Length: 200
Image (cartoon, rainbow, N blue to C red; front, side):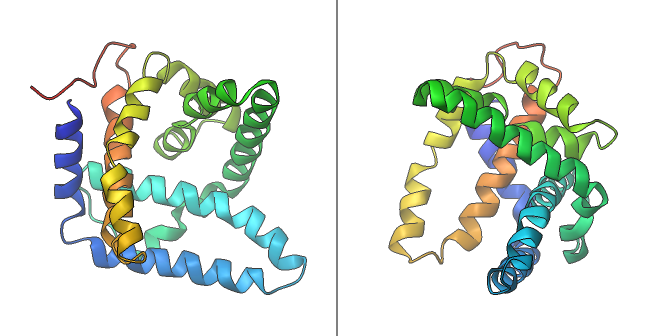
């Protein structure tokens, strides 16, 4: 699929779903806000639940990519794999940190190598965190630049968030997230063939 096709599909997937996705964001924000005001325990709770919410959102956008219905309750789906999500977040952060100690560029490259880990775990909950990480490295072999360019193509949308004092994020964040989920699906099982092409 071309980048234009990935984006076009994303727009269709989130059409009529912005309200539900925004409520999900409010739930995550509210819980995080409460945790921030609880000394020590709140910090620990936030550390544990944040990866689970990240996994939940990956599940939600993969459901949208499959044209399946979503509900507000799906924001908690990732909690069925809280331990795996937490461990995946830890090892991704740890390995990225180690590579960054060498030089900034290797750290960024590894960050892209690990970028599909949560989507893989969301798509394959039977995997371990280490297996999801390994599969992400395999999947992103030859596609790191594709993802970088795809993300760079949203720079105008990021600027729109700034000039609207964050209001545009209500649409832009789901749009970018859905596009990323489509990117994951487009390279899944691609055997590292060139799948992200320039629009003709």
